[in-house]
Image (cartoon, rainbow, N blue to C red; front, side, top):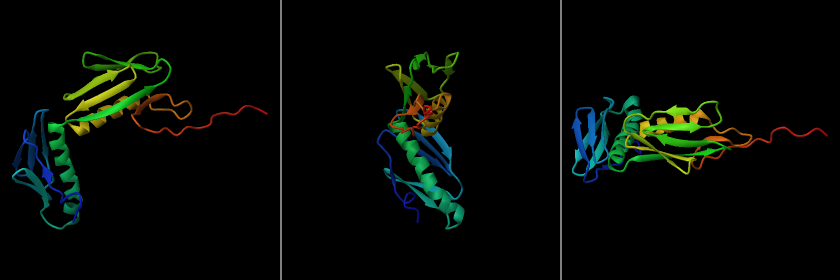
Length: 179
């Protein structure tokens, strides 16, 4: 039995869950999410908890059990609390700013880079070098943060670039002088 899959999901008071066969819709104060789960698993609601169960003991249903439970738990957490990803910009002259909904990055290119977030994702900037990506869909928040980081990933010689908060960049020695 999957250790992750058999854990129940507690549903907060302000969140409503609608189960229609393999369709699961979750609505809360932050937004609304819906997902079609694989046919190998089923979701049952018992009072304030959700249980994800396998239909049989086949290999695919065992594989989908923990995944489906995590996806549903992320939907419930997203519409009730939301998710957030922090990025740091390091480099001389590197900075970010928000114009309307879009993020403008000046990270050493000849032109500023514009990034438009998808629906349901908000971007905020602190001190011109800290970018905060937040929203209720964990997948969209993570993908948007990855797109921002991909504009200028941290390089190993000077450490310049955009990195996740707390990310360690392995540094290289670089060239040495002639003897």
